[in-house]
Length: 75
Image (cartoon, rainbow, N blue to C red):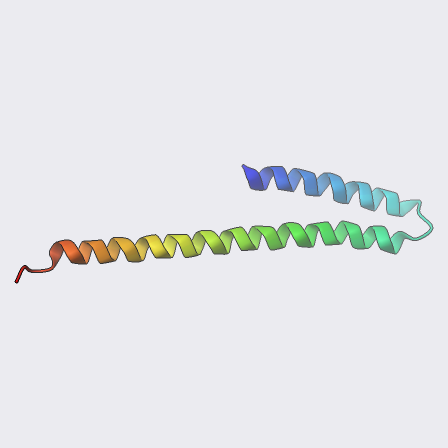
């Protein structure tokens, strides 16, 4: 849900920047803003996906460890 909200804000900001670049005397600044906001969005999505993958991997390792502890023979 948070990603969808970020996507909507990114679309609005970049659309405004690109439309403003059409009638601007210095359009390169607005093009940079439009593409920069997309770069920030993609970087944020990549970072969240990486964090979720690491969390999932740690949870899997913990489950494997606990499963091993339950099956370990008593001495």
